[in-house]
Image 1 (cartoon, rainbow, N blue to C red):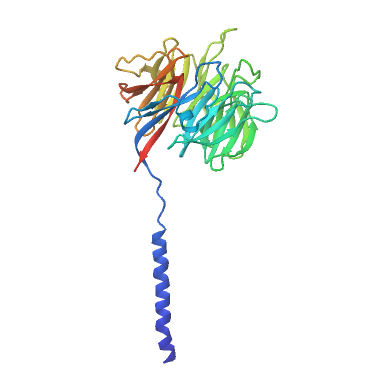
Image 2: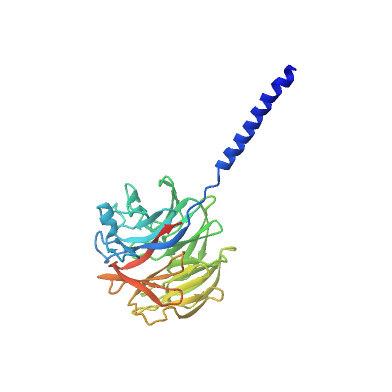
Length: 368
């Protein structure tokens, strides 16, 4: 009888524990990241007039109210952005502004990390040591790390959570743009007028799993721009030089074999790939924005279809949320610039003024 009387409390205790455990499991639902549903604002990096100290700014434009602030970073932070800003890109809730600085010894080079929601600086990461500036140029992101190229020939790896520099790898010459494919980083080695380096006609390849240099892919002279296509092929713009004359070229690389596939005689200023769509900037004074066929590597028709005049196309940014195409107009390269928004059909939606020499954009979104 005693055993029967004790059995029921034990049964209820076990049943309660099982139900409680089940309830706890139901409470621990998977975290769903908020999804953007509209573009509300645009941050535009403006390089500023060449040769001036503290020349760079970030313009902010509110799409709904049309409110414009040409030096938004200074307004929000009370300090100048710096000299020679060269890139502005987003990763998660933060944007990273690359500030090259005035020269290799000024100790004014850094990466400015900014909150996209507020425009407030989170951290200014110094890019210099006791003897030199690192002259940072561009940034790319992969698995929680930011990789920064530099004119000093090094790739610098930053942890995007701690915002600390983890390590630096000597990988090339005066490095410019980067693309990441198949856990490998590809960075262009350019000709720099003041920083002499014999590595100026190649793309360096870095294994991001080991953070070690794998190889260099030979290119035509003065490789500056690079973009990756959805199938893993890479397209490289090489600018040549004026004296002695070396003609520009456009080249296709394989990320499978890490070799050059083909060289084209196109004279291009830049290439932007967004999904299956691609755009190239051609010509000088005036320049033109044209479509580009990734499959057969051919330059297509003018992208702008409504006759909108853009004086000097200096950069292209595609909004990944709605595929709108933003075109930066450097105008006369000294006074205020313009930023145009075009729909996918090439017709203008709106435009706004910016600081001097606008280049690229980061977008602010509202979320579901």
